Amino acid sequence: MPLALYCGFGGNPGQIPQPLAVAEEEKPLADKRDYYEVLGVQKGCSEDELKKAYRKMAKKYHPDLNPGDKQAEEKFKEVNEAYEILSDPQKRQRYDQFGFAGVDPSYGGGAGAGGGFGGFGGFSGDMGDIGSIFEDFFGGGFGGGRRSSNPNAPRRGSDIHVQVSISFMDACKGVTKKISVTRTEQCKECNGTGAEHGTAMKTCPTCGGSGTVRVQQRTPFGMIASQRPCDACGGRGKIIEKTCSKCGGRGTTSSASTIEVDIPAGIDDGQTLSLRGRGNAGLNGGPAGDLLVTVSVASHPTFRREGYDIRCEIPVSFYQAVNGDELTVPTIDGTVAYTLPEGTQPGTVFRLRGKGVQRLNSRGRGDQYVTVVVEVPKGLTREQKAKLREFEESLTEKQSPKKKSFGDKLKDMFK
Image 1 (cartoon, helix red, strand yellow):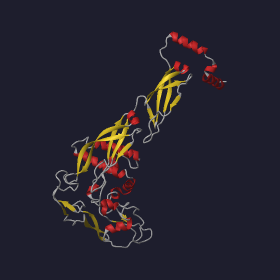
Image 2 (spheres, rainbow, N blue to C red):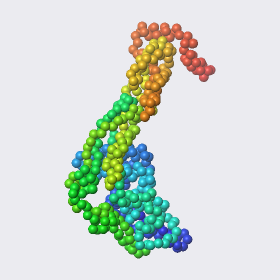
Image 3 (cartoon, rainbow, N blue to C red):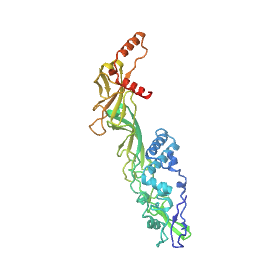
Image 4 (cartoon, one colour):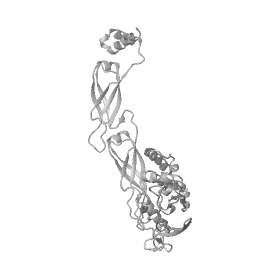
């Protein structure tokens, strides 16, 4: 809905202020889909839910997976724009409160409000410039939003999100992976200007080089003037006479490259590495974005990870549990010998110090915990069962204390 300002100009106490009419949303904003709808999440979702939804949608519409599909390309841009706003806590708060008016500086002729719209006292000043009204009431917008309205200001490039799958052992030991990335770079032909090499850019005749034009709007208080970016030059103040043949006037080109990523030992499933400046190129001399690599670690048939510790199970026979034995225990570094004491009970856990995963960016390591699983034999012959019964009958109560204790408890329960 259009943004409305509620201003108190005296009047009777308790009288509801009337809205000051402002321009309706420009068509490009009206055509936009709700950012939450774009990512397929509910308003109020957590950061993890937001990030998970973004990865899913970005992968679905990524240009590499949809070559030549213009619709997918537009969807990909839409997904990135939505995530850029909702992943920033301040921008998300403004969007939740004011919609596109809170995050688009060109909406309604100025940046959004930071302090709400109700309960203002009277004001004095020039009613001829709506930009001055916004400055008087809102102090220049949300956290300096006016800076982003300057099309010529340096802008940081967008981040690139990729996912890489590694094995359990690679996560424990560290590994170098090659990743194919398509990123935008500054056009080398025009050095990012968008103009054909050897040609000049001329001053925009519509705005006279200022990058902005003044428009007037009729309100109940008369005509109110406001400023907005010039449509003819996109707010740059200059017009390209002849666009660069290599980049088509965009100032950037897209190229695929293979990047080696060093994944450190101790990385865990779902963690993200940030490679500074390896994302998309910035605009107007702004820095490049980052390459964000999310690591997916495969499971292991023997080991299970808990933080920097490793857990596993080792089966032993009834005889080994009773008599004790020298066991060969697997670890991520190979096998080690462990002396199993006689009379070891099922479910006993023993620890191998320092045999876990190396701590990320540290020299320390976790431990390995091994659970003893006593395997009960199946398919015994009559002779084996007879010998086992003879063995059972030869045991004393002292040799099976838990069995005796349980039997005494049952007697007490049913006296």
